[in-house]
Length: 155
Length: 143
Image 1: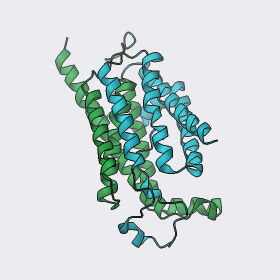
Image 2: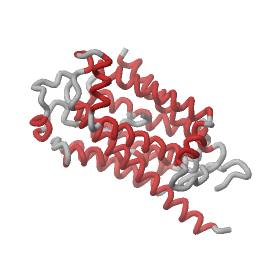
Image 3: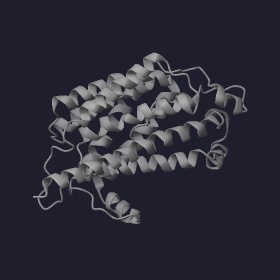
């Protein structure tokens, strides 16, 4: 169950990244729409099927991460999902045919190790003084949502 | 033809969008964390009640908007930069999120976590020294 959710989160998020990257780069660089061209830019994005599909995979990854967090500790779940950095790079190399120089590989491995270390050693249970005084509820049954250690990639 | 200036333009645009993505993601996470801290446990209340509480929460909606900005900036980056360039660079937000956790939320950040942050910084620096894009765009496309 736990491993299934980890694999689902990692592969859905990476597949989402790869599809979005493929969809967005198909027509070359996105045109510049100016400061008020947000709707035009949105239309440009929403017209790309691969990006829509990638977005659906992002949603899948997000829901699967939520499911994972209900059965595993945050400090164990997030490092496992950092695996998606490596899967992303493999996908970029072998599916998108990007040329990945050794510096990039070294960088990705460094980032992945850093994320694992940063999250593993996080203050999982220590409530912070600043907010726990403002929070009215004496108990926080879900653990501290605040100790969310890193960015939620692929949201 | 206009090689150097075009490259410089590409670099500054990439930097601008990366900075937007990282700032929006980190501050979005901060908002979501602050917001979720004020929410009841999910299993303890009815779904409708939970959703109404979420909408009334002063942090969750701005947090969601910032997350949308982050997604939008990242999608734009994908249109001209390599996936294997963008993804490790956006990991900078782990650094900013840790700093925000320390400074704003008063979380105690252990030494091992700072070492992790340094590793991320080193990794991002390595990736940033590689070309922004290595693929060739289809004919007729800009870039």
